Image (tube, rainbow, N blue to C red; front, side):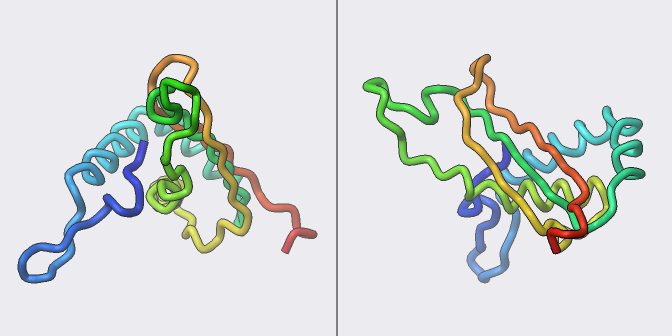
Length: 128
């Protein structure tokens, strides 16, 4: 799961921007996933033609989304989309400016893990 947009970078005393440890850890996880799924990724890349439709389902541990009384916690799923788009773009080799349609949903994880599922499809010609 990527960090929120607010936790991607930090500035140092000289006002230079650097990736946070949390963002570096996310990028490392993505790299490991990519290396272990090379064949599937290659197959997908051969089918994709820009522009694209990208849908993401973000699964969060119940306690990250809901309070004990069942009320929704203040947790902004859309703030995680930019890091996901950047990762997807790098993996499939298509710039995220070609993501013409994108959507996402927040879910309670069925297994107490935080994770993301992603569906990518070619956008039909009549949509652009």
